[in-house]
Image (cartoon, rainbow, N blue to C red; front, side):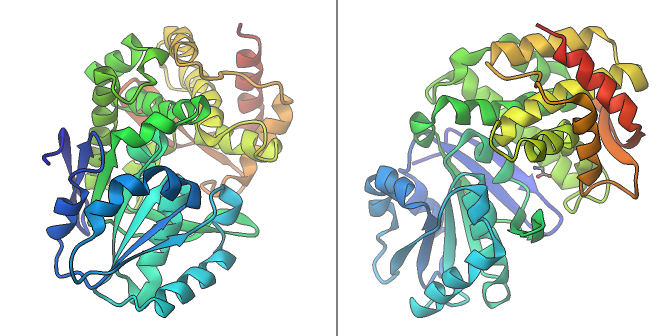
Length: 364
Ligand code: GLY
């Protein structure tokens, strides 16, 4: 079964394809291209296996190649270094070796965790990403960032480790709750602002009616997002410079998430609020046309995304100091000079952040 669309990722360490398919028919054929394989390990959440194994089982039953499922618990708190030992042990018990293939089937948490396991098991074995959420499809499954959390910090232990391929079955999106759609859409809007031009116009001219896995407009938004990310990763795989732009909106987002104990917002919703903070600061500090503030508010509203939060502005500003991308005591932001022209590592004063946050709080 041929993919509906395909995007080539040209990272320095590896080139691979992101294949977009309507369902799982085609996964077996894709895997065959990576023979010889001694065994296949699906790392996934039990509930995802319940939903999708009836579709992928037949794709994975290849004579002479055993396949096993290892369940991992979803949720950011389970993406923890202490949870890795049980998975390594299971892999050893089940006879995984250097010719085994790990398939990370799930959202961002599963992809990060399973990718980290693959990057370290026997000093690194091959793995593939099969994203089942919009966020994983347009962001976390592409570009090779894999990591687990430590007690004192998210994604503190990890590496850059590219998959052999990414297989994106659109049917998986059919089961997504609204909140998960929004979470992925915030990253799409981010990619739109960063890329500017035609892609931003596509983002701007659609709305939440694209929250449907059969929508042709959704497909275009997904492809454009992956193309943008692929372009960035091909120039800077290890985030020495340009790749930092992908953190647009994330400084404030991380602050809001930690201030609200990761309970009030999903990551994407926090990014959505953070994008507007970054655009207000961009208008104030980088000469971005201020009409983009209202344009972005409208875009976020059209996709049912939040753009303000009731937290105290000064507290949000203070929490941005915890961002691991800061240098010393100054907060570093990604800002836009214009859509399509991001600039990174811009030092911003806490009072400026608080003032931007206060402004967006007042917006209807
Ligand atoms: N999610 C941001 C990156 O992959 O760099």
